[in-house]
Image 1 (cartoon, helix red, strand yellow):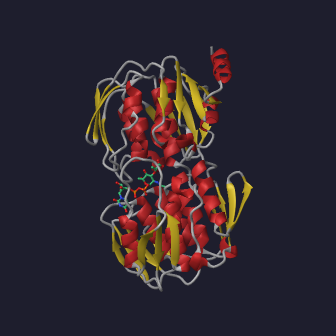
Image 2: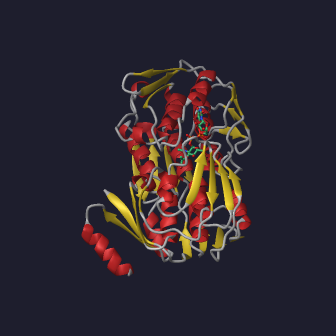
Image 3: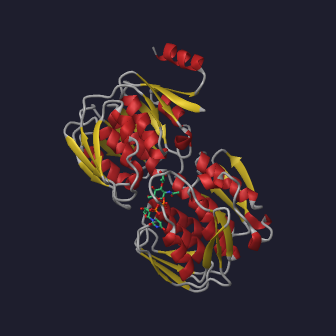
Length: 436
Ligand code: EPZ
C-alpha cells in the first residue's frame, strides 16, 4: 500500500497547472456512449475514477483509446446487444459515477443494468431522484440480485421532472436519459454546477438540444440521434480550490493556472475574507498569504454557494486562523470524518450534528494520518504541509481517485512530499535524509 510522507513547514511557492474537471469528465465519458460515432475528448484528468469508468465502458464493448495521456477516443458503435448489457466489473462498484451509465444506456438502448454505485463514504447518498427522473420519462426500475439496478423502458417520452433535492448526479443522469427521448423534458430545481453546464455543452456538441444548463430550469428537446464530436473538458474547480487553500494554509504564494476564475468565486471570496489575497487573471488565479489568517463562518451549498467538496480543505485552513470559525455542512451528513485525524495534529474542532466549531491554533504538529475520503484526504495533506515536522498520510487510494499527480504538483511548489510504499522503511529514511 502506498502512502505520502510529508515534511511540513515550507511556504508553497510557484506555479501549478490544474487538470480537467473529474466530475465533468465522468458525466461526459458516460455521455459518449449515446452515439455510435467516435467522440474525442480532451483534457480528461488521468485519475483513478476516470480510468475505472473508461474500463467499464470498454468492458461493455465500446472501443476506448487513449490518444495521449489526457485525450480519449470513445466509439460505442462496437457495442453489441445493448439490450442485454451488464455493467459490473468489480471496480465500477467502488466509484460513484458508474451510475451515469444508467442514464446513458437507458437513453440509448432503453435498458441499463449497472452495479449500484459506491464512492466516498460521506453520507447515505440515495439515488431516488435519479430513479424518479427515469420513471417520469416512462422507465421502470428494480434492484436485482447481486446489488445491481436495472432500468428499462419500451419508449422514453419527455416529461416535466421536479427534483425534490438539488442533485448533481440526478440532473446529469436525467439529461443523459432525456436527450434521445421523444418530445420535451423540463428539469426543475436542477443543479447548476459548472460540470452540469459542461456535460450539457458536450451533449449539444453531439447534436442534442439542451437549453438552460447552469440555471435551475433545464429544457431538453429530444433528438433522433447524436453524432461524433471533439470536446475539451473544463478545468477542475475543486483541484484548483485545493491548491488555493494549500497556498493560504502554508503562507505561500502560488499561481494556479488553467482555471475559470468565475467557478472559484465562492472560494476566492472566503479566502479574501480570512486575510489571504486572491488575484484573478483571465485563466489563472494567484493566492498569497502571510500565514496570518482570521476566522469566518461557512455553510456549504449547491453552486454557486461554497462547495461541499472544499469543506475539509477550508476547515484545515480555518483551524490555523485566529478566532472561532463555524462550518455548517448542509449537503452530506458524514463529511467531518477528518476531524479526529486533525485533532492528533493539535487542531481544536468540535462537531455537533452538521456543524463544526473551530478554534484556531498557532500551528499543527506532524502526525501519522489516515485519509477517510477523497477531499478529506487532500485536506490532511494540506495540514501536513502546514505542520511542524514529519507526517504520513495513509489510504491515499482515495486521493488518487480525484487528483492527478498530486505529490508531483506539490513538489513543484517546493513542498516536501514523497509517495512511498507503506512497508518500505528505507524509503522513509531516504526521505528524511533528503529533506533534512
Ligand atoms: C456529486 O455527487 C459529486 N460526485 C460529489 O463529488 C459532490 O460532493 C456532490 O456532487 C455535490 O456537489 C460526482 O460528480 C461523481 P448530489 P452526487 O446528488 O451527484 C442527496 C468529490 O469529492 N441526494 O448532488 O452523488 C445526497 O444524499 C465528490 O469529488 C438524494 O437525496 O451528489 C446529498 O445530500 C464526493 N437523492 C445531496 O442530495 C438523490 O437521488 C446532493 O447530492 C441524489 C442525491
